[in-house]
Length: 366
Image (cartoon, rainbow, N blue to C red; front, side):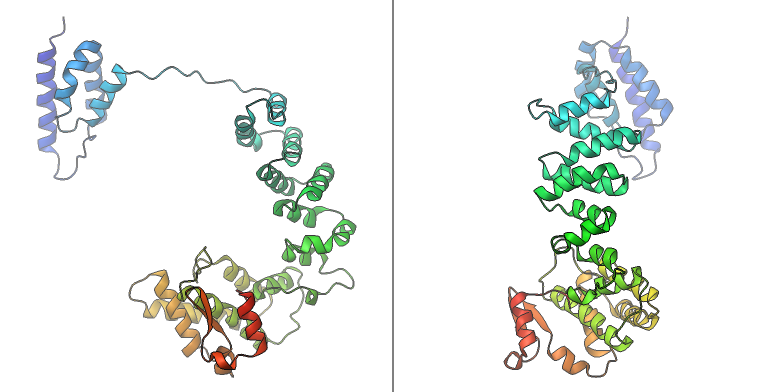
């Protein structure tokens, strides 16, 4: 016969002793060591559910009691046993996924994605083709992305059908990178509407193709040239000007509170990192060093360490420190965003036509 009162008294004495000897601020209510936890649970397991119900209000008031209380609660209200399900055949899951009346499409989608990386390529191909044929846009995007990673010519048919239905970006990227060059040329205009950068890289060395036909951002332009291992036709001074116009527009837009959404930052801006890599490949290290000078200026002068402060300091560096002949005239023609209204940075009355066009189109990059 278990003497519940005696057990409670012994446990409480041990608990209070442990609590008093613990360093100040160390215990957080679950700080029993492994032996003590094991012993407490062993004592509790000797009690009936009725006895546990009776002692629960008492134990709740003990120091270091939270894991004891949880154990009592689980004993009083055990979770139902859920045996591990055995894996079904992939073809069975695919059949349910493709049958929109099965009422198990969502469950099947999750299971197929979870297993995908661990399957034989034969089964991977089945899953990719099934996703490409799905009416769900997210499925098609996922299938297009996986087809690009695990390319095989068997994907050409399903990707072509997906391309004809809708211009999914991941499908477009895979088509540009892997389809026969004749197909890419035939659909160049449509493909360029979604992914100019990859298209220019694929067609860049084809006879008669010119990058001038596309209005590329400066980071795209430099990245394409570097990837194609082509020389830059412009001189370094012109490239430097375009690079810092690009940067200035970003910091002005951010500084005025009209964010892109991802938040421009010199330390966390993918387009800037891509451009820096390209400048190195194109043998223009001096421009990279000037970008580092700007970053060093930010670090030396910041007091708060916030992104907003770094944006303001980057803007100040370009306006006051950047050494470029004709800089004042250049900056006079750049714009800033004031709230939701675009206004000229210096003198709105003297805007040239190209700046007016810039304002009306709300272009973000040079």
